Length: 161
Image (cartoon, rainbow, N blue to C red; front, side, top):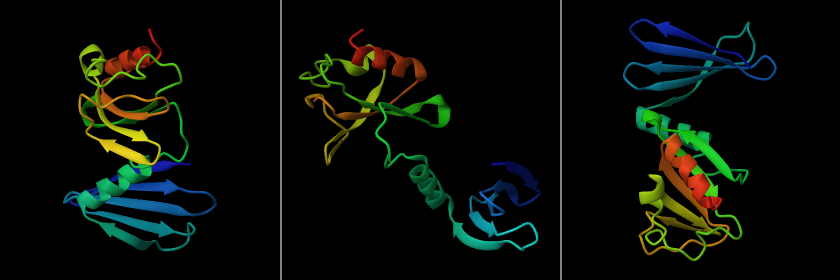
């Protein structure tokens, strides 16, 4: 897959993405924040506009595609980089982890590692903005925000180090 970027003076930027076969996707990001998505079925065809998005909707769609709302595979750790070098990561509490039975407050997760637990996925339930008295259970998936250093410290905490 090849991605080429070019400036569109007075308009914004254009990204051309070669897909499988002869298909090509073209994304135009306007200086106004508007995004246009085009499709070209082969090199000799004209591109046709498929979608147009305003800035907030484009960002929401981008985060969905990136996996911020759903992870199709349940990895032990998934990393998403946010502006400013912050990471958004998913961690599963492994069997036997020292955190099991502790609460967010009693384990002092934020104080010891610097990460913020922003949600806990527990089976079909999602606990958003968990409070200090929220307990940790085996196989909880924790959604956290922090720097690489914070996340490394949290990984060490999960491993009992």
